[in-house]
Length: 94
Length: 144
Image 1 (cartoon, each protein chain N blue to C red):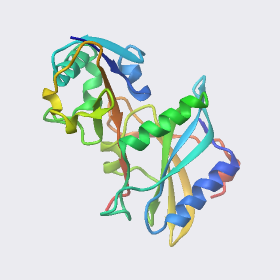
Image 2: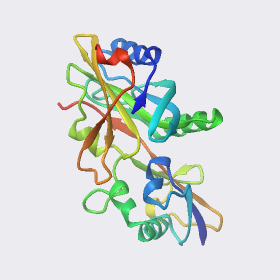
Image 3: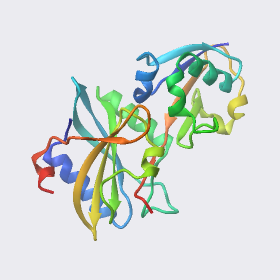
Image 4: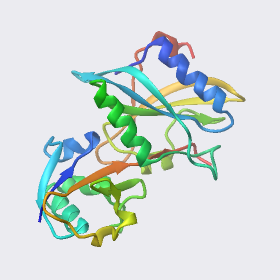
C-alpha cells in the first residue's frame, strides 16, 4: 500500500527536510520501519533503547491513535496517512 | 536566540506563579528567520499530569495537534514549549531530556516559594546527549 507519513516540524531535519514521506507498507509498523530505513537518524528520536516507541511519541492513522486500533499491526489502505505526534512531557528532578 | 517580549515573559511568569506548587505548561507560537526565533503568541495549557503535578507536566497529543493547527491558521510555527520548575532551578532534568525532541525551544522558569525567578531556554542536541542553553532576547530576563 502506498501511504503518506507526516513528519512533525522538529523531525524534518532528520527526514530530508520533508513535511511528508511516501512509503510502501502493509501495516503501521512496516510503514514506520520503511520510514526509518530511509532516514536512519529518525530512529533515536522515535525509539528508546530496546526498540520500543518512546513513551511520548504517538502514532495516528488518519485521525485515530493506533493504540486504539491494532498498534503496529494496524493494516493500511492505499492513501492512508500516518502522523507522528508528540506528547509534551517533562518536569524537575525529584 | 529566542526573542520574547517583556509582556510574554511576564505572562509565562504569571502562569508559573498561579500554578505553584504545581508545574505549569504552555506552547510558544512564532516565526524563525536566520536562526533567530521570535515568539508572537503563547497558548497556556492545562497540566494533564494529575498524579504528580508538582514535578511533572504533560500536554497530550490532542492538545499538541490543536496548538499546531492554531499556529498554522495564523501563519506561525509551533516553535517550543514552556514549563515551570517549582522550587528547582530552570535546568532541564533527565526526565525532560528523555521526553524532548531537538529543534523545539524549551523555556523553563523556576518558581521559589511561589515567586517566579530565573528563566532559561534550552535546545536538545541532535544526538540527544544534553541540552544547550539558548539565549533569551529580553532585557527583563537578565534582571530576574
